[in-house]
Length: 235
Image (cartoon, rainbow, N blue to C red; front, side, top):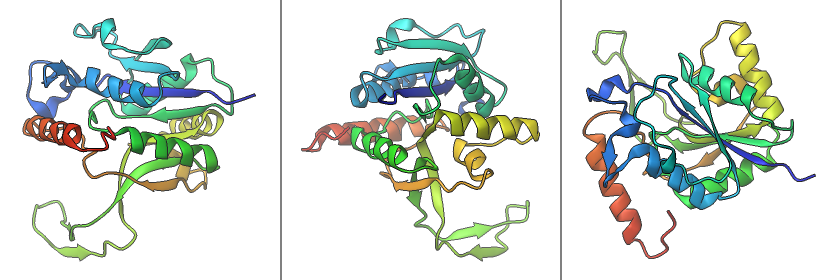
């Protein structure tokens, strides 16, 4: 039996660093909320996928007509990102071999090509896969005082991006174990690595940015405009 694809989008965060009057996923980007753009990009690449959207139970901004998927469900978000993903995994009627891809709602510039590259890598690699970007800048370390104390070698360092994709059974086991150990992981790959697995790093585009600060909105708009202007229209 062919494995199914599930898309999990944690969208229960409050986006406090944005300093806005609503969570950042509902801030407008080119006339639409960030959430709508992100879901549209995912649907463009995987129209037959099943979506699980993690929202704050008291969310008063969400509108169902922003969801383009025929098969989708809403689950309550948790205190941390990993808790939202665990809620999604527990709610979905997935088989152990189904592929689950988790994507940040605040990454609306993800391209079709990167999504499909990640999908194929996660299908082929036992330990799953994640989009990532080799570190290009000189890396500095401070000691908590915002003063530069050391320069870190950047060889072998990558910025972790999303989506990250894993077989359902592996991801469910990894996150359950993290919870049992009282560990809060900031991405799914961290939990899988703790099991001794080595997820595949898939080199992704540098414009797969995460909207975090107020000035990121203008940058995201510029990226989307540039993507539309490219001849291959690979978004």
